[in-house]
Length: 309
Image 1 (cartoon, rainbow, N blue to C red):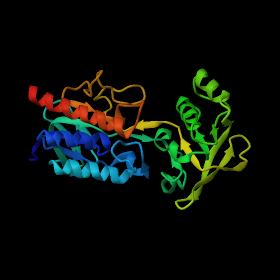
Image 2: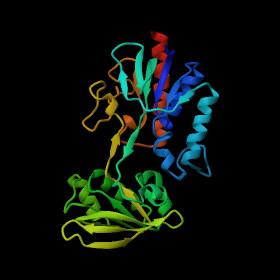
Image 3: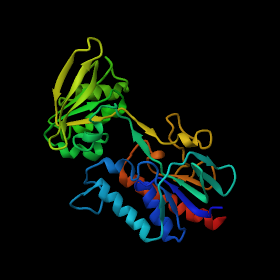
Image 4: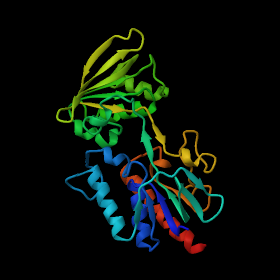
């Protein structure tokens, strides 16, 4: 029979690791279940320059490693695995990793969200080398350079407008012949002198390698299927994110896009003793620093919950 933990944390990105640091320092001996991609989205980022405390910048993997070592130093333990079943009907809660079962009085969910991609052959190679899913994170690396944004919704419009602060030109590529974004966002994009729109095209290939970075892409016309080459220094995907919450369907409250709903000014879910932090419940900011902040909140709320029960 496995031991019952005080706290189990699902996920090992900035939210989960910050929660682990705070829980461990509160002598709660958290168990962190890392999931199939330890470190989350930050591990696909090369240089991180906007995380406070690193004046010369730090790579995403190095930042995650520092957080993990800090959590381990205070007594967090880690296990690699994928939870395939969660039982929150009775306490202690049960989490199943295949045939293995772990129990805990508190569960902190920090499973994050996955940026949607196009499934192109070179995506894995070039992610972080000119290919990005976060304009706020990586836009500043492409000052006075040619930038392409893929997408036609509000997020794509916002990213394109933000990237005009850095790029010499920003081209927005849409697979449809019109935007899906709100009228006001579309108008702002159309009115901006630095932005050009390319309608009815699909990005079907990426050009470049890790030495050169992105050098361009191949676009295919959705009607004629004619292919053209487009030169650029960076390509930003803005086609949405998928929160990693399938495990909690019909168990925890979610919004229409699958993000976990937490109570105002809190990380509490609709199940007492279950907390959610980071990108799994934040569809607005999606930054490492905001994820870490909510990880801190979850840990403090967990400690107070245990003290009161």
